[in-house]
Length: 248
Ligand SMILES: NC(=O)c1ccc[n+]([C@@H]2O[C@H](COP(=O)([O-])OP(=O)(O)OC[C@H]3O[C@@H](n4cnc5c(N)ncnc54)[C@H](O)[C@@H]3O)[C@@H](O)[C@H]2O)c1
Image 1 (tube, rainbow, N blue to C red):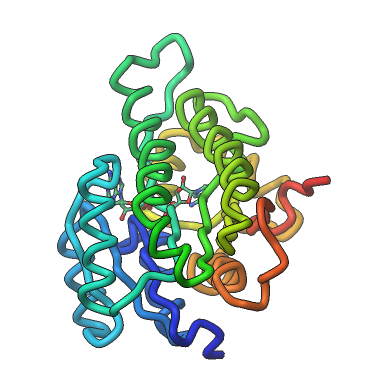
Image 2: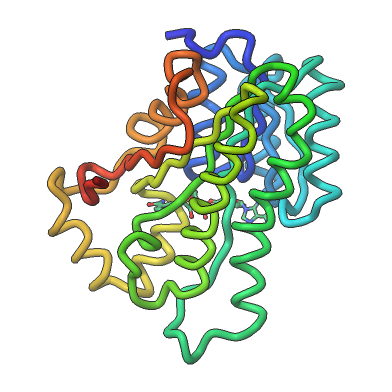
């Protein structure tokens, strides 16, 4: 399905995990992708897999200068920017009383500030194209999962910020929606090793009884929100989680 033909999309954390799967899926649907990630080896592999449609920049998405650089790269390589997926987010899982200032800053700077930086840097271009933004939330934020203090706080702040942006930028023709995924990635593998009971609890309660596949289960939902098929949707949270959480 080529529902993203003519779209030029920034994917933060677009080299690996769900971001890497989105880079692949979105290009298969006709888009060009600018992936930004700290993982240079994985980024180079993505470009080698499709040099026509994928470019990569190694950079830390919490820096405002990097957001501006990535937007400039989209314009110089593909002539425009239509969409942004704020996917990258780094955090450490600890009980609240063990959380350090550095732990807090890591989650807020990569998750919340990174999302803000990329939305602001992209705004002038998205305004020209009637663009779409997809930000990433998490069931951990909605549920208040234990050991996720800095992460849950950043994720719910991202949802709050997204709703404000949806209201402010609707008149510019820019839409912003949120996806809360559940998918097996290296990040989840690491978390599972540290919190095996929480992992088993999620599987046992999930109606579909499994973590999703990043490319088959999560990326198509993001693709829908980036496509013109969702042109009458903004400010919404979509759960790509096998029915784990049902929002009302
Ligand atoms: N996997 C899940 O089940 C799940 C559940 C809920 C929410 N999420 C959210 O989905 C998104 C993707 O999750 P994932 O499991 O693929 O994560 P991951 O940790 O597997 O991958 C994240 C990617 O972002 C990159 N990255 C990290 N910090 C960066 C930085 N400062 N600058 C640039 N790149 C950076 C990493 O190198 C990596 O390629 C995140 O926002 C995560 O919080 C995931």
